[in-house]
Length: 308
Ligand code: ATP
Ligand code: MN
Ligand code: MN
Image (cartoon, rainbow, N blue to C red; front, side):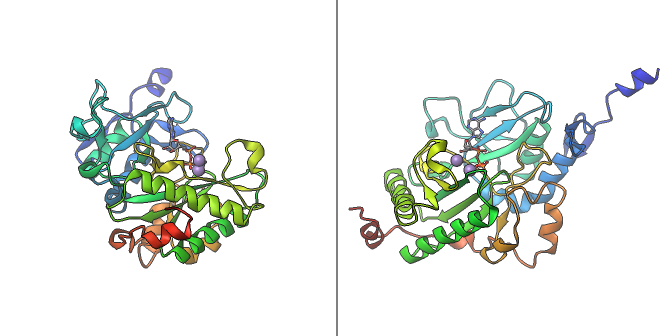
């Protein structure tokens, strides 16, 4: 009887009107965190996270069995629909099944119910996929590099962007590195943004060859930060602010203010347990200005970057 009871299904829980099945299922054996913990996290951060998902194609890293189970990356609607998750008009990406979008706390909890751990977003919104609304720099440090050098690298990038006339925002990836995001007015083509991000990365790597690399391959980034600018192509994606990572400890990609960056000790510093407390303790949203920052890439900037 004892054995049977141990394997008896746990009682479902309800969150945002969504039934969470197997709420006690441990998804991270190292921390003992459960499926319900994950759903609670997404429910708690919904007001912070939803603005970055709104009307934007979202890709889901789903792993219904938890971190030790088989994960899959879902870009399009598949046969088994996820309740509450909307699908975009097929014209947004005519070659494939419709893309997905999460516009409500209910849809977010529904995604967690369906085994979603990570949320990845595109740099454009569905109503105008041809005009990106941000430019992303993914800073990938060599594993041997001290964290302080990663912080220094992000600051250098920020200064360089500032000299061009662009404000930027920083977040941990929740894994190993940092992401620096430049919000843009939806005026530029993918080509302009792609080439601009490449030129920024190249200038930094040429100016500080010991600190930055832009060539792929591990041998090109020994003790350096690889500036991955390839996130700026149409349909490419980056993990969303406040997304959980499918890693031991269930860390979170955490938006930071530039002022607090020096106190951050690693990319996986916050997780689903500590992040809601961080938000409560903060006096203001570190990315408060993000939504009102609409910048353009001017001719003068392109000239400074030696672009025509
Ligand atoms: P790190 O700090 O470790 O570099 P990261 O979030 O920058 O973390 P990855 O998690 O390795 O880097 O993601 C790499 C890229 O691949 C992102 O653009 C992401 O959206 C995409 N991606 C992530 N998982 C998958 C997957 N299973 N299949 C396809 N693309 C993925
Ligand atoms: Mn990265
Ligand atoms: Mn990368």
